[in-house]
Image (cartoon, rainbow, N blue to C red; front, side):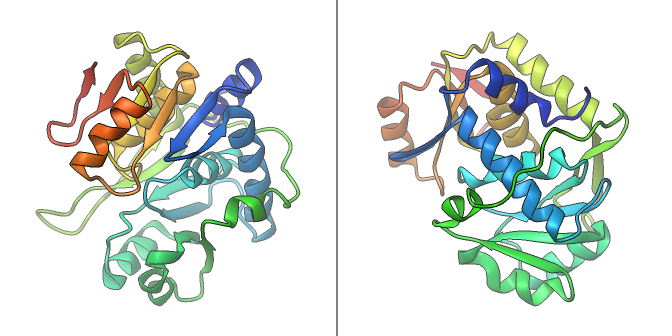
Length: 252
């Protein structure tokens, strides 16, 4: 099956108890992310999300992101990742241009998104949301998609004009993740530091999709702080870093 979400579902079957994502003292195993994403997919389905619909994500780097990201993909819908620091005017442009049907937003940045959303459904997440998601009815299986179908609609920064949506296919995203795993020999024993935001293509590819493909773990900072970043590297025995300044992977 081509659907990018199978990176998660396949690894969840092979390494269910392996922790996929850490944030400070909290962590989710592959089995938990797989289960929660199927349940959040059920919630999105109840809101009318169907194959090919665009669903925007306005979230900082949190364990909620892979849950929501793979939930959207499971339904055959398209992920539209947005920077949580965008203004209401900027969010409105992205939502209109992408024709997003639903917006998933973190509570701390929800005001701008709600102002921009218009008639769209807005799903607001908080620290307690994972427990609430666990009570939703799960969606069984993953929707089949073609290699050429769009998986992610990723917007450019707009430095020379209005941001443009790059249509990234399931094959494109999967191949990039698998190449990262091969190039850096990432295994299920590795812990990566997610130093780039998941709304960035590098963060998605290296710190989430490649991690899922390899059965590795990623440890996060909600907001990048150099001193805390060093503490996290030591605390979690990080072996690879998706680095912020030079935007590359460093092997430790």
